[in-house]
Image 1: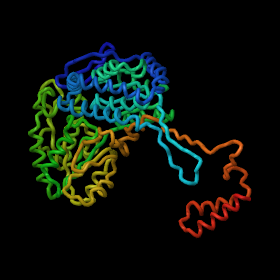
Image 2: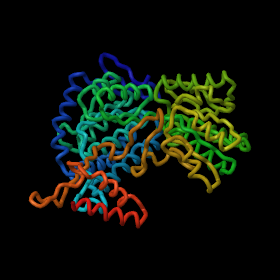
Image 3: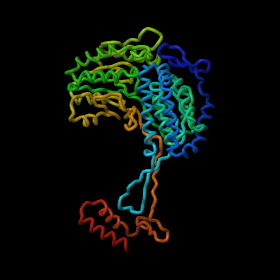
Image 4: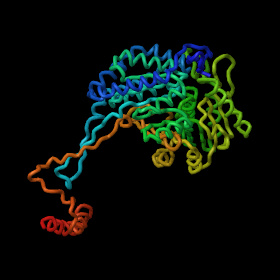
Length: 515
């Protein structure tokens, strides 16, 4: 396991060698209560600051990340196991992209927005304003331990919220690093709060009087959180992973498709919520695809994440290794064929050779359950209808990819896939782009990741023509006596497109109002 509790300490284990690299004291129940209270106490001050002043603090965090990026990348790779290149690209660069966008556009995004009500309401002005929730609980997983928390923290702070963040215990070292960055940014006391521990710490946090929960993790835990929040009508955003399909048509450029699918399936050792976990290939190119993808997979180097020639680092812990082995064993016992890899490498780390499987079916765990590991299962299809059916035949609905050389009906095809994001001739891309929505269907969760998921929308309507001594009563107010015909004619005036009918109804309405 990547973490272990010993003498009331969380032991942080390097997945490359199974050695303890740090020990962190888990937060006590009392400490968690104190952190929540600090967040509540700081909330009025933080929400009272203008968006521009909040952005100043985000700029400090942004600058600290750039300055300390080497240490950050090293800590991520040591604690999580991903190659150093991925720590820079998918963790630090993705975080800076999110932050840069919100720093540049935060004021415009959260400015009051006017609502046009049309000619029927000439004296009324409506607008939308955005208010913070208050205290947000942020609970993020171990697979992207820097990017995911800071993406949520950026939007929480920009929206005027204080927060309490609990990292996955396996990556508490990265969580501590984020805490140090927030401390150095000199945020007001109590705005940024951090707690450490396992499931009980999360339960205490969610069970307290916070104002919203943001959670990324497994379906099982997500359902438990949703149930707890439902009992309190507590707002919650859940991003719960996927079983993402790739559909490869015979018209695709196979070399390009294989390269894109390889990265989409094996990046972060396959431990991404949007990893390609099912590949459906048109029967005419099935064998050729298998040959190419197997060849490319064999060429990947698995090993020390600090070796600049390494493509794939270790899995996060023993539990993940056991799960991958179980999925492969189950598939082979039901008739699947292993083309390469599929076994743990010798040594103390959690290294695993990426595998390519064929002859797979939906009766196998590897095609039905979220694997979260370096396996590429390949299944053939004959028609577009069959491909769409197979891709949608899952409890998940996070993302999907289509690989094709056609250009005609791509949008129609993408719309038929039952998921929140569809990539065409690309994979595992733009979920970190702040302009693109990131939201799952079905058991992949609900709630989005935009700034508007971190604020409450308030509608304000002002009658600008109101003068107490002159202002007549609105004609739809009581009493209703004799107004049914007026309302009947008013519908004709406002909603009917016929000019004669409108004119007649308008005349009748005017007569009624003057009576």
